[in-house]
Image 1 (tube, helix red, strand yellow):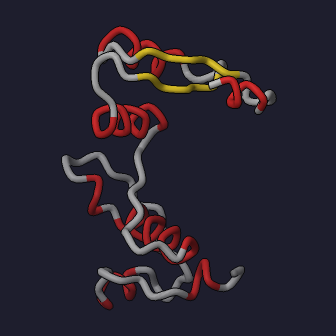
Image 2: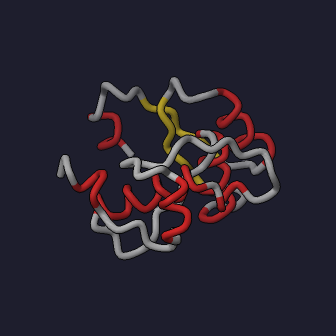
Length: 120
């Protein structure tokens, strides 16, 4: 697994782009401030590496922040009056958006007390 992180095929990345890496093992970190961060070579390499490591059948999708990931889940799977289980020390911005913008009912649990999941 150690070498798999750097020696897997970089699908979708052209040979010209790999040459731009100057024969480096991984691409340099590209800053992305445009409208399409999904075409950032650094992000592409990360997503492809995670997909390979997980042996996933679907491509991996990364987000620029935890809040962006949480909102994506909320908009994809939850609707008004649904319930969500969230750790009690989650970022308050996430819980506020879930509760007050999307009206998701939240059950807060302590991450160290897995027994609390059995109650649900």
